[in-house]
Amino acid sequence: QLQASGGGLVQAGASLRLSCVASGRAFSSYALGWFRQAPGKERESVAAIGWGFSSTYYADSVKGRFTISRDDAKNTVYLQMNSLRPEDTAVYYCAAAWGSSYCYYAPHSSNEYDYWGQGTLVTVSS
Image (tube, rainbow, N blue to C red; front, side, top):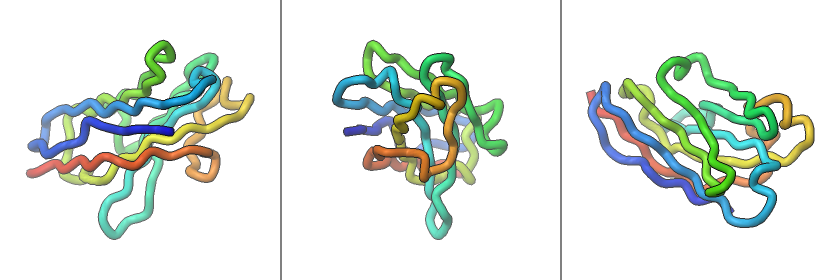
């Protein structure tokens, strides 16, 4: 089970940090990702982090502004979001993917993920 938190209403240029806590065992053996879905749009991958070597992936739209990290001791994955823009407004979802290959790369397709959190709303005003 995944529980996301940290969303809220901020002004453009502000920062937020999302957290996602996982219950259960073997957290350190899962790749983790953040996705988002804006109103009227399809869900898109934002960032992902593999296990093992902690390889990362970022969507072009967030590169240089967002940072994904994980703390396996706390069963938690974070998404630090800086320089937020109105177009970042969306419901953000965390997800977990099981697979030995994710030791080497970070999956960024939604169909690679096995478990999903409930979502946390991020609203960025201009």
